[in-house]
Image (cartoon, rainbow, N blue to C red; front, side, top):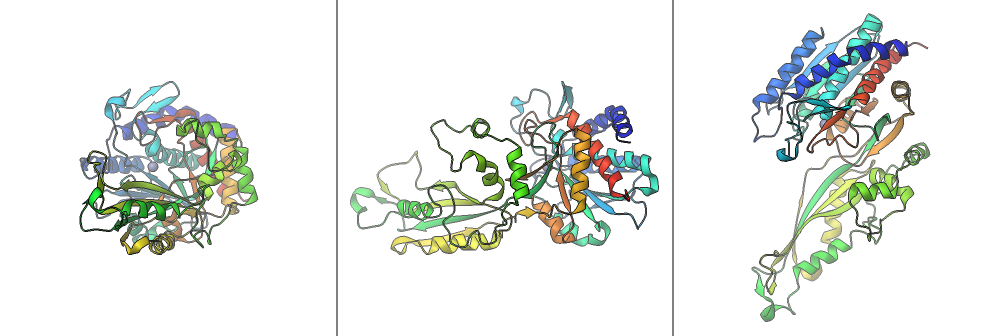
Length: 460
Ligand SMILES: [Zn+2]
């Protein structure tokens, strides 16, 4: 059966690439200062594809921004499992257009990659869902699973209305599992399921000592310097190795299981790769040994100063500055809570303000980290389907970044398996210039999802 499916999908691949190109031609950038008629146009195009594929109950789920999420379903029978398939049809702006070697919205195949904004992130996700559904319906008809589609229209601009859409339509969207096709593989040809995401939050802190900047010759000495005061506070947040010094900050942390650690190590990620990809200077020593790099990126929290301001370079005269500002960004590891951590950070800093300087804190909206129970049989089925499709061992990986949607699915549907997959790869330049999709993995991804659907209703 595997062989048949692979052949059928290979035969149909030009048609799937054509459908993908059709979506990529629509510049559906969901940022306010771009023409939002294109987001509507891409929603209409997705709707038309759903209708051409014979899906039912097709409708727009409208957030206040007017950037439609497209819903559709392909139902078989109430006694079959139901899977909700997520992707998004909006895209990022093109960034520096002069750096594109081809036109961002005129998709072109060069070698084994398809170039264009949205090819990888995330219009390929939409076509993968449609193609795999078409295949499993041909293969199993009414014996296949129930499939529901939810294609968001404002993921790249922050998913502001998505939580509301999920809660308002919870009954319509009810399912036994979610596939989020908006992630990527660890490397080309390496099938990967992302099982954790870090969360984030940020706190801005301002210290003030005087009503206005002063002549440093006339005034410095008796009056404390807010710049140094702020540096002392910031330096107290972490230890020399970058680990966090705030008591109880990591109390809820869920450490990786031995199996997860084993999976991370099997990826063979090296310090050399990190240095090369991150542009780390040769003289700089890392905070962790090589074998802990992935664990540090995916499963531990981090604190970084994302901005700092005391006076400025252009006007750097002999001045005792009146105030100092910093924005402290935190990445949260699975198990940690964004609001609680932001609060602990504020209290820790507040308690360390020297000389009674006036301190003010502003906490930004955070996103909680995500983790999912990989012992559910659906994970095993997905892992084995991907391995068969890619002809390679499936890896369980983490992701150091945040996707608020993943946690929203958990909040709405409770403890069901949420499978984070996708066909981005380290070379795809999602969000950057010259975004591209690696076509062999596009094909593998469609085969994998088809095999997974077939596995779900397999009684054995
Ligand atoms: Zn995306």
